[in-house]
Length: 318
Ligand SMILES: [Zn+2]
Image (cartoon, rainbow, N blue to C red; front, side, top):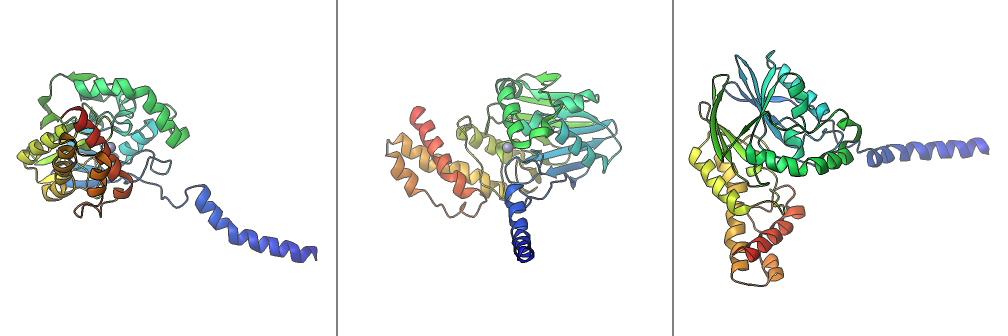
């Protein structure tokens, strides 16, 4: 009798166990191992997953890049923590024995710069535009707290560190390791966001100006008008290879369809309605399901909120 009961319980436990494991420990999300992807010449991208920050992805849910020069590696964005910076370093080491000598921050979001300190301690020089650093300073504390909630222990040994070399102005040209760099403010997703163009290789790392495969997010601190202008600037640079802030390495055609056209859609429809003092909820209903963007990942979660923020922005600043 007891035996029988134990056997029945045992069987039941076996049936339940895999289901529990899946639901309690996010076992369904694979561990993300950053991997260098060759783009062109000596330019590489590291493409992060599209989901939220998590322990399995170490907060690296964004894109990174690097350029191998004879004097060392130029790294574009440093990761979300010391732990994740070390993961990026490992991916780079598979391509070249050169150390990371320069780190460039394209923006102020946690996963773009909280790895600065890790590379600086190893001798790298960190560069950023002044407006980027300004935003980083206002958000640093809350970002460390926020990232700790997502990745916990992985934040150990991480301290926010700003650039050693701060470039004033909205645009700068520099040369590192013989590589020409055109660096421009976009202020698209956050104030002081930037894009980095490498004219010799016709590659642009757009930071959070461009998202492909997933819908971009308009945050309260985003600025679709500046984003739209910056996108026009990007189109004028006419890069052959586009490394977006999120999504696969791509070309201008996809960037235009999934980002440029969306900025224009928001301005032409939602912004215009707000300027014309049309009612908000009817406007949001009317444009709830635009065909060209419906297929993008995160559409259901983000589109209405995006429209809402653009409406409020254009209402306040017509
Ligand atoms: Zn981002």
